Image (cartoon, rainbow, N blue to C red; front, side, top):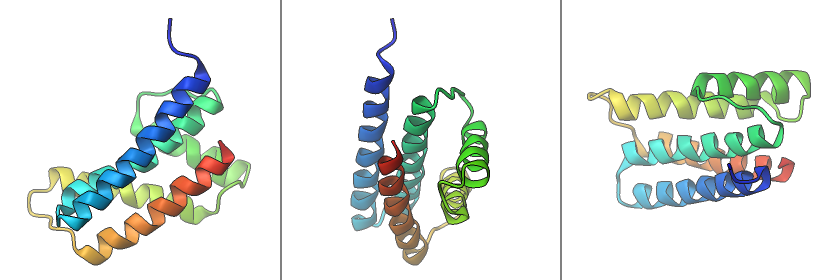
Length: 128
């Protein structure tokens, strides 16, 4: 039997916060590709918690992203479009950091995305 919905939401929120903490550690250690990965996953986990709250299930990152944009930005207007922009940028930078062997992120980009991710996570937690 799967854990209750509230427990899954709580675990996803905890994973999101842990990913942000890991990103901060990676930034301090100049491990910028790892920081981008953890920043993206902090956003992913918090949106996953939101999805569980609203009984939306998917195994696809793109489907979760699309659902968030459609439901919370365009239909319900709970979040400003800048939140989707942050989510989308985090995904793109994570992809580049993980898979593009020639990509080297700069500290300004990583710090800006980190700042936006903190706001994203804190704001979504209030909705959860």
